[in-house]
Image (cartoon, rainbow, N blue to C red; front, side, top):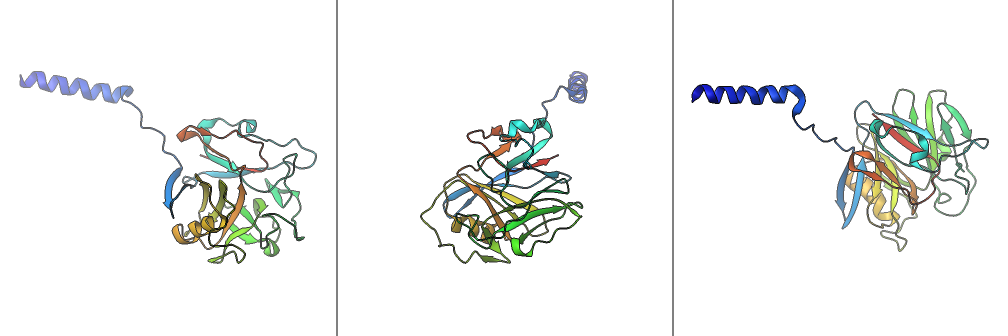
Length: 244
């Protein structure tokens, strides 16, 4: 009987080592968070991930959907829309792609969320370091890999945008980015319609960021292959992708 048990255990070990065991599920880069009664998804680029901006210049055809990027979903940690755009899908604020400017920075006053000053720029250096700066403080640099302008700023050096009501009547599915302690960017997508004030507090009070920038509302879209999510309900403009 003892020999039989040893034989069974040996066969089981051999089967596991031969690759017949079920592979572990892919770990999602996005995690659910609850804050003030609302649900949010927080997406953090995995270690070693590369961030890239897709934004069309005036002589290029914009990629309006995640599927248009031509990426193998196995290489994608997540992707989301990232900045203001015109009806054709081209950026209306600063856009730097692969180190090359495709649209100049917009500093004139305007209407809508983008015109709610201060607005800002999310940028990533060629070293991979990320930061958010108020638009008026942005300075072009050859070390910048990509940059996208959007607005308004949600959190500015630890303070909420001065024009936000605590919980205004305008509620939307919204997405944004902040720089977490330690320097990594945290990309956030609300799963419920929320106000700008609540979204800003989520960044400041839950994620403890010093600077956060609003990307958009109502068109906010996410591609998260690990969870089988691929939003495709509207045309997009600039898109940021985190690849593994």
